[in-house]
Image 1 (spheres, rainbow, N blue to C red):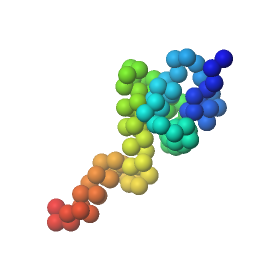
Image 2 (tube, one colour):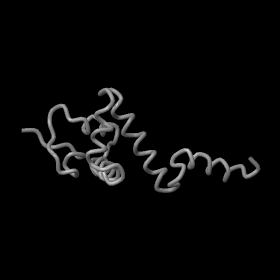
Image 3 (tube, rainbow, N blue to C red):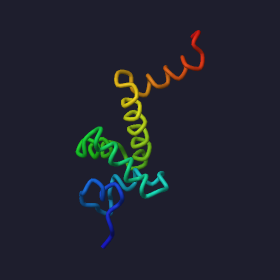
Length: 99
């Protein structure tokens, strides 16, 4: 019997050999960080929404979509209207206020 991955463990869902969340979390080194990132995204997109978004892409792109979703969710927390694009725009104007 294989233990659930850190993502499935915090979402309290079953984990299988072909778990889409497990492959999405491979780039995050710390098990605690994997769990925190998964919980954050599940609160932002919903548990089912997160799993559906991850499952919508091929296996080799799942870590990239997870990173992208994480970046966008962080951007929406800071800048609810423009999200990650707003973060990039606001950081540019802070560095160079003249445009």
